[in-house]
Image 1 (tube, rainbow, N blue to C red):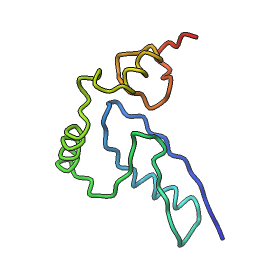
Image 2: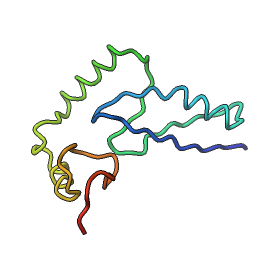
Image 3: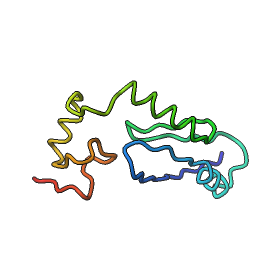
Length: 109
């Protein structure tokens, strides 16, 4: 049985973003040489997700509104995890970060 593993990394300019990864997944499949079987695409960050749907801007706007209604970002103080993290990483400008200690934030020992 043949298998292939590829990690794809994404940096987004905003707190919420929709990224069409189809071309990169297709390229990874082509690079793998695997002709049939299963392709598993998994988001490895707790606040990230993968969904399959049309790459349509209106749909993205609907999802963004729906997500904001489920878990509003502001006021940030309402989220205990966010306030703990803001205090611990020393950077209160962006809220939650995709990494525990982003490079642009100074971490004090």
